[in-house]
Amino acid sequence: MSGLLVLAGTPIGDPADAPPRLADELAAADVIAAEDTRRLRRLTQSLGVQPTARVVSYFEGNEAARTSGLVEELAGGARVLLVTDAGMPSVSDPGYRLVAAAVRRGITVTAVPGPSAVLAALAVSALPVGRFCFEGFLPRKPGERLTRLREAAGERRTLVYFEAPHRLAGSLEAMAGVFGEDRRAAVCRELTKTYEEVRRGPLRELAGWAADGVRGEITVVVEGAPAADGERPGATELARRVTVREEAGEPRKEAIAAVARDAGVPKREVFDAVVAAKNSVNNSE
Image (cartoon, rainbow, N blue to C red; front, side, top):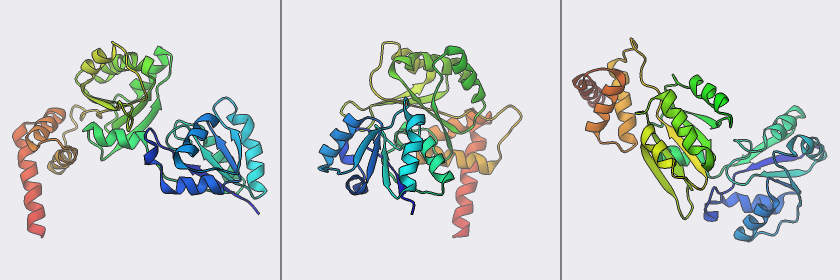
């Protein structure tokens, strides 16, 4: 009889954000695989839980070596709980190898949803969030970083990156060079923590701000690329883009101006598209 692999989301800052099920899973597990056992200890103390499970470390350095042993325990019927330092395991954190290996053995994998730096940053960025793609961490080497950014230069969806504080200024400068200095972005620092900060503005301004040094956990949200030359969006698409910006908190007048600028069309054309879309909704009711 095979066991169960449980991927548990953990708080990205404030322990009070822990999902209620997390405490139950910590208490029920036979084995807890933790990215940092010391952080796990602090988490269980915050939640008032005293696990009886065997605790093993499972981090980038030993992930490949530890996976087979954990899979064998799962195959033998164990309930294995995987937790990383913050957020959801396997999302820019250890976990993918274990999930893939467990699935190959026919072992059930489930998740305890929890806080997400990606979604939290998107929500507060004031950038369009209807469609987005998560790019994880950029490569450390400048040449490889530029290659990755160039691959995303034409991406129309909003982009989300994780970045280390000591590499933030260089990455923002590289983004400004590849995406354009005026491309809007948001740098979200220490989300849900005491010194939470969100800086919004063009990439050139954010790069200048970061040059003085930044601390903490960083998530960068970057606006998607504007429509390519010759790719003229229709009225329905123009109205949709205005709606996305309005839902993100941008005033309609500013949203219309931004959509017109990005699409390369007159503001009047965007305004007329918004009015037509509103009339269409009213007539259908």
